[in-house]
Length: 428
Image (tube, rainbow, N blue to C red; front, side, top):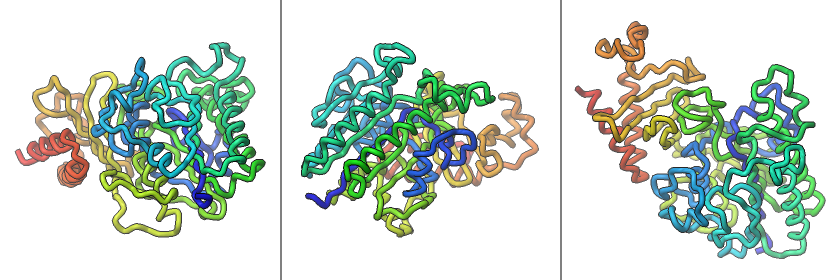
């Protein structure tokens, strides 16, 4: 038991991958996260399976896609969504408790108002309520208080023989964008959009530094795997299809993922395979030397961290969502070059509208080329301006086939239906 590693999961809410210095941001101040990546590893192609809080969180803890666990909307006014809404109730915490792990949770949970019975130490909350204790701005910032509590837990954990898994769930940088005043200095009046968002990112970085200092001070660092990630990204409302998230665009689905374990993970390593939140549970179970349930769609990333290159690793990422404004149900396949988004509205006769983006030529996903060369849709959304471009039907067909095969593999009937309808339209 003593050889089993501890786990600290530091999770933020609605944090874009490009909001951290080690991921290429040139103006943000995140020295602790940058150092965490430099002394560990970062993954450049980590995604959320559903860019909304509760669905993504249910996936990371149960290990299955939202269409399987059935938490497909944000949950409020329930005690335990995993016990009342989800089709899957057993979590990674249950498996680790069977291995005699102490389980602790601090911060935003967003899967119910009460301890679902899987945490020995519970200081979680569901959502809403803002980022300040008692709602007093410039009073006590909740992330600072949460960090105080988890540091106390770490100091007491040194007296325990059992390994632990501790989750620190920060609500920021989720809107409303706010942070203690001193963290605004690098951004306010500097031409940086949404300075409160980046001030919150810098505050989180500060608190990550405090947690690392506590690990070093308590001699827990060498046997503790620390992982930093977010549940989904943030569009800043720039996409008309959704408010901040609820869309398949990269700024909503692409998230940071940094992992650090001194002496076990190569320093300053950058990995680019497609990984997602469904891989978190298999990875934790793998490092805890637990059996990984065969029905889980995710895989442990441990081979990558130990210098292996699995030849059968996924070549794309699969995303599900229901859009916020028009309630389209969508399935998305994202490769290195292409992104195909298939849509379905319960009120429509046929599926659609669908979208295709060439990520090499159009990394900002501004030019939808799904139907660009079709003469019969010139009147729709001024697409006649794109008829000079070639048809991408071959690419659409190949991507749709891949999407269908994966949807069938994970038993996602809507994904299969959408793909079949698109393939049928292509053959007409």
